[in-house]
Amino acid sequence: MTTVRINASDAVSTETGALIVGIHTTPDGPRTAPGGEGLDQALDGRLAEILTTMGFTGKAEEVVKIPTFGALPAPVAVAVGLGEAPEGDYDQETLRRAAGAAVRSLAGTPSAALALPARTAAEAAAVALGGLLGAYDFTRYRTGGDRRAPVGEIVVLSGAAGAEEAAARSATVAESVTLVRDLVNTPPSDLWPARFAEIAQEKGGEAGLSVEVWDEVRLKEEGFGGIVGVGQGSVNPPRLVRLAYSHPEATRKVAFVGKGITFDSGGLSLKPSAAMDWMKSDMGGAGAVFGALLAIARLGLPVNAVGYLCLAENMPSGSAQRPSDVLHTYSGKTVEVLDTDAEGRLVLIDGIARATEDAPDVIIDVATLTGAQIVALGWRTAGVMANDDALREEVVRIAGEQGEGAWGMPLPAELRKGLDSAVADIANLQPERWGSMLAAGIFLREFVPQGVRWAHVDMAGPAFNKGEPHGYTPKGGTGALTRTLVAIAERYAGNGTSARAV
Image 1 (cartoon, rainbow, N blue to C red):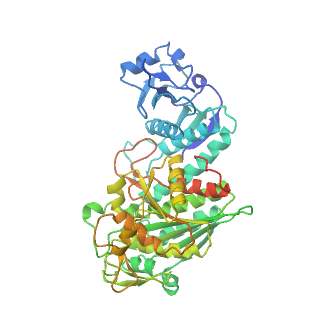
Image 2 (image 1 turned 180 degrees about the horizontal axis):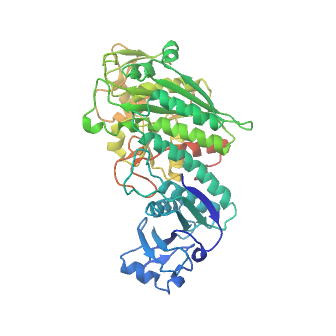
Image 3 (image 1 turned 90 degrees about the vertical axis):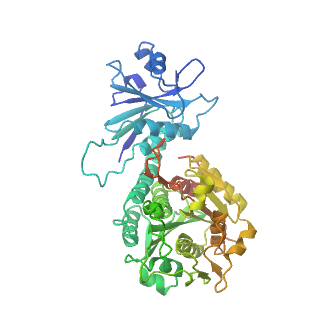
């Protein structure tokens, strides 16, 4: 993985494989942002002329490379757009995306120095995190070719007090996001429920987490009918993993529950083939919970945290659950299965019911739950629903601070009737497609006891980028919501103070 360090030296004297500088767009042409002072002088005052000739305007995330011809210790200068200059502090997401876009363009370069605005520890943290995430590439299955390796070392040029600690924090968070991306990108032939549980045990133990695993026998014995029902059609049986972190100074507890369908064929309600090839990403919620718990432990946050990974493979076979089957879930409620492709909510309700036994201050579930989320909000914005308006807005705000798009959504009372069942307590799907993201949230809410604060995040789109890379986001697995969950834990560790962006 790419490493990061802080260096207080100036941009033009830093020995590195490439020097990255920020550029603003102005009415008079491109202008160097703080941190890149001296580059224009080193290029004989011609930087703006060079950039303008190359058609570079300084708009956000625009990138161009300039050979320095010996004018700098760095053989290449990389200009990255920051848009218009702010009147006050820099927006941290702007810095993260700029750093990510620039570093991503430098694959094959051993090192890069980031002379972007880093006048405060928060700005340095943003630059470091964006650069680390932008350097990501999933190479496990490539056997050769001309693919260039990601940047090996990032140097953030900053003399700000606390910059080294801030960069170290960014490195810890980036390590977790990188792991989640790797898990999402791993083909289901190499990541089935038991294998995911093994990874959780190994890495969770290394981080100091307490790890407990339910196998298919224990799941059935203890009544986890939702997880068992979804997983019973696969030769790879389901698992439930509980990760726990405690701190001696903690006064509050958070619980995270993640959907972990390691591959979703739709079961007997089979998906169209065009909708199936990226369903290895259907464990992105469990991945985010896993990555967040690792980061919380490694950061030593003064909060107690538990995470549940609800793991199953949804496959069609002679032993698969059928439409019209009735499941007896861990909560004691029964569910009529009308569509086996509405399986994520079935594993989540068992995880949510088990999480309530930990008596947390809040339960947050994250899931790649519905295609309707993508229809409503697109590929980059998650939908947030909750049984508490203040909690919903808090999750949306914290996600926004981390640069992870989220939008608050309602749980309309009139949609509940569509989940009525003639034979069970509730059906897993409403007959109409309208408002199906919201109906899924209403279904989950039915399994949250009164008095328990709960929020649901549907991140079907944000978990997997099917388009081109952008900013610090690669093609494929994104690691979405991992940073938001860490920040939520920090919010509760702070006993009411706002979470810092990381």
